[in-house]
Length: 123
Image 1: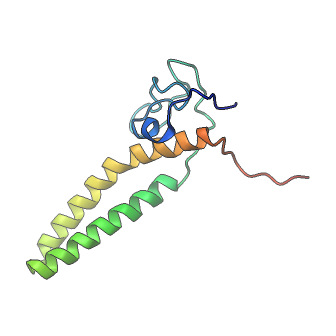
Image 2: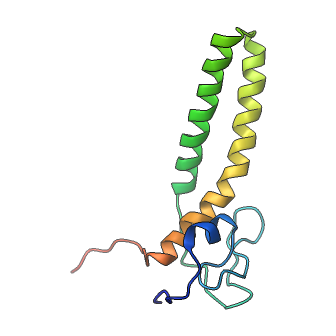
């Protein structure tokens, strides 16, 4: 299906979890599962597959933030190990949960916008 010229911009639309075709309907049914279709325009979401992309980006972003904060805390305050464990654990879980849904929506919207699909060999 071709992307229309009046389609909403994919990055902000995906980050908000909205339909990449109309920008109005919701893309998610629950926390991370896609709806079957958009309730506004009827866009089929069954072909959307961001695979491990969101998890990779979440791990990369959270890892840099948590390790950077841990190094800064150690150099600046020299806290006991349990403080590092509490801060790193809660920050890792919190940031991961906060980032995974917007990134999954953004990757799905970019997939739609760029007409990306599974690679196939020609026979």
